[in-house]
Length: 113
Length: 115
Image 1: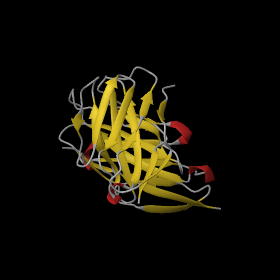
Image 2: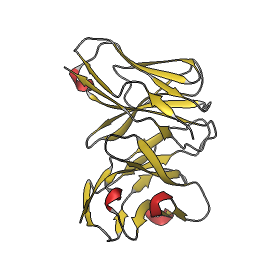
Image 3: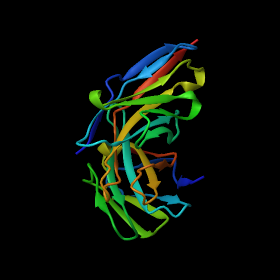
């Protein structure tokens, strides 16, 4: 089975800090995604990547950036964390088949104080 | 752009009773459709998917869903729920044009099971 690993399950940061959320997948998937999940809003796509060094904005990219230097790793960066970025962040990956089946990590819950 | 509506925020069902979770989508053609489940503190797990063909699809854990083009719906059903089915359920729609592999999710339905 594909495994998607998010290295930090829980983080607490202060306003203005730079935050890195790391995600690694182990099955050579082409596509990787970052979603944030908030109660009542479901999952909203922040950024996604079709290939190494490629990235595309999702629906809510403001305040975030991403990095994909290696195929298996997709990092989400909060340049200057704010309290409204307190959320659950979910990483996912999928094959480059157009079939859209996502495999998710367990999530990273970020609290910004 | 595609969109998904899950009209029920929270549903409570007795153990052993039947279940139906509603999902309506908006997309210009026949989309890819998915149901995912999220147990507390966990990521999302795929329950089932519809790509084409038979409109009634079977998934894991005894769930099924039916694609109804005329109603733009993809409702999830289970004939008899178990306490372990308590979770949050997300419907998602994916575009079928190449190069647009992202999914759009609904806001989720939280399922509570009472003994």
